[in-house]
Image (cartoon, rainbow, N blue to C red; front, side, top):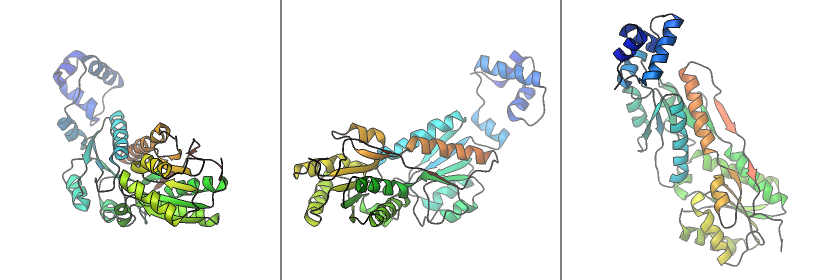
Length: 336
């Protein structure tokens, strides 16, 4: 393993000069700094993490807080996590993943022990119990999600309300007059998870604005639950011709269930969804969808944190506009 003394010998300076170049605690000449940097690159030297933390008062670690509660679709959550980790590495930071439902206690534990420099918080509720602590922590944070009152916080997310509206507007534009939202599992709504609530708000607003008959149906994340919802919809809304799905796990089973019940997609029933593009594209009937930009959200959340760590002002609210891609699952009402 290359040591700081090896770098000093190679660059023709003292070990303390190399240390000053790394920490920035004392000025050194530009020529000396360049010589040290060249030696570091040539020898492949990597500062010891503990020593670097002592020198800079930073750990170079970010916390990613993802409570894996029931109703969470883990594959999508992992897309966020991968994006955060890979982007953090480009900024020479590692990521500490916190998956337990520890709430305020977990946040305070990692902050008080100086384990991390900053935090990214996911699975945000409208009335999240972590908000008062996040507003007073001496470490910067970014929330992927918008609580009811985001004042004093830095939040970023897809504009889920606009996404729900966009899905309905597309169905209304195709002439559909009776629509339904097949949403997240019931416990997600019980917790008042922010993104799910925003989709409901957007779906309802657009349906009312267009004079559509509409209904909302939470759905457990299983094929059996998808079948039950499909049967219930056809029983209670025989005129149904448009469905919005905001539940990645039941998207394919729901299409299968409707077709087993005699409805062709899109001939008899048009379906739009809010989900990752790769899922929408891969189904037997590719689904018209609003993309869930997990990679972009994770990367931009890290970017906001890096700016905050550097003392740069950032916007409190960043809402990504929804993007709808037309695929094979939608058609004009009564298409043969």
